[in-house]
Length: 333
Length: 140
View 1 (cartoon, rainbow over the protein chains, first blue to last red):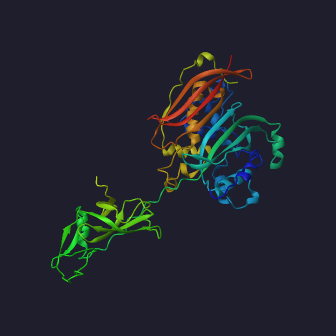
View 2 (cartoon, rainbow over the protein chains, first blue to last red):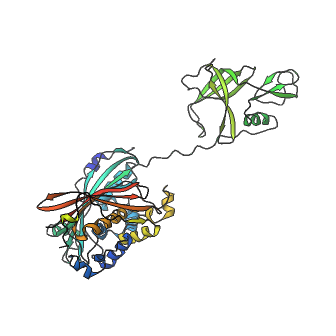
View 3 (cartoon, helix red, strand yellow):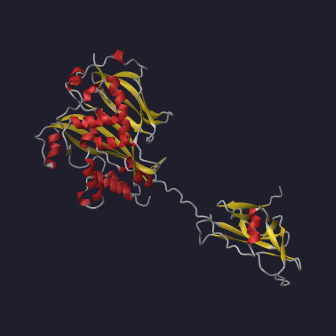
């Protein structure tokens, strides 16, 4: 986490998230029906006043878990809130501030973890619902399965109010003191830093194949480590070249190396880093027993690689289509 | 007041009738409209997959509501006093959701008797989606 807002966050605990709000719509039968349909709930007390009376509810009632839906801001409100996020800090409520501080800590993702509802009584069509929300807890940074994050709990209290409920937001807290509470909801979320999934490694650079070096890579594809040999003077040479460095003959064939040798020299590359490789990257110049040298990757821990170590080649295939020799420490086993 | 629940309706160990439902994208759209929860992760496939999700997924509160249906059908709509859940796993379109509601005990609180229920929502394979408990008033 780059920023630590622990102190500023602690100051928000216990604060209400703004002035109490009033539901956009009265509790109403159409929304109750939509909700019940979305749940596949065919309980007649949600549709049929007679069934509601028979059930002792006095008529149609709203499903209990719909409690918080009355105070939702709807699509227009959601879009408005999203478009203004992070802009006017002076207009932020405590919840906006909390979310912004958590975002600034890098805890940009959110997941709901718990919901606790208490129902004082069923809600009936025609009721006006007001809500007051308070930030109840903000946890320390915790390690979770999703990534590091903080749990926050908000407590929403729902009240049934009448048309005398003040439209002036600053007067609403006082009005709620006299209103009938109908339910509460505690909602716990985890704001977390999504674990960056490791970007896929790009494939290793491919060698440029020429008529001089093609035999080497084709041999590797067939599982053989082939070394060029001058047919005139029998000198081995690597990397592949058109002519013998000793006698200048253009005639050559190949031998299959057993892959045994010793480390003649090595480097451990730390920088610059090419994304296809893991670093630190040991690269060795191996003196093959047959009598020439070859540059290749080695599997030996960079801390323990040393000149003179006996090594043995194996052929490893990278990215499904590039076979290259890699030298392992030869333990003689 | 709602029709009273009696202790003999909810003996310890009794279970409510199980509800099963295969979640569809239509359910998610319908719930978004009914609840006012327009988080695009629940209805916009392009945004959801763009955010690394395999597809859109169910609202936690939809799972809670579906579980509530099993509870209210069992104890009566006006009798539910508390309902608390933990959202354990996301729900995905195509999954069959299954409710389990079990009576675990009764207790006295502020002069009223409450029956406690263990509630959970799983998929057909038994993966737990939502776990929690609820309580309902018992009248005498």
